Length: 291
Image 1 (cartoon, rainbow, N blue to C red):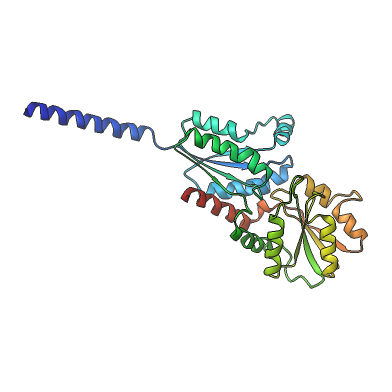
Image 2: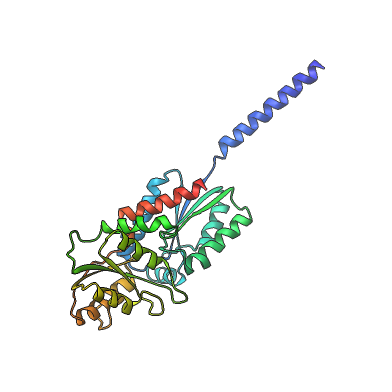
């Protein structure tokens, strides 16, 4: 009987040692995936997208970093022009699974939880969560998602606005808008600006969404604005900012407002380079891990 007990103890010790050695040999592999729409403008890639990516990498140094773009057109153009292949989210998650990652944090750099988020990012996340491909897979929300985000973003935007504007001066932020349905995030952010007495008016590129250019025009006329500072309300200052907002064509916002008699200046630069905006994305990622 004593021999049996000794043998059993020896087996248990061997199993314990084997399990301990196995755990040491295979530590948890953690990944940070930053999912952006993407851009073909090298300057905005470096300053805007990489600005957010670098803030997240600094906040999560224990995670290996991976970049993802959701726009097929952007990915194709970069591949053709630069020979650089950037994965979509599903491809990246497949690679991470094959490499043995078990803990994956995905943070999107999208502005709002709209079409791109709902149609490309969430379905992929839900698929891998349902299949239990990873022990842990979470996603941080876009910049303007919860009610508390709007005041935080409004205050963050003041750090890039000119100081001490007069009553006849206003920043006009150009957002994208949605071609399919009204994105209420712009209304909520405008309400936050107004509540905090921030001299800023929002308009969107998409004519079928609101507040469109005509809506914005009516607002600044009502406020008796004489001088406008145009700034993009977009994570990256890409095609819309450089052309629709600040371009030399007659129908750019800069030239349309100038033709209406406004004094117009332009500040090009996406939200991604704003350190206070970066902090909000980091907070969203941390919240995702807590949930």
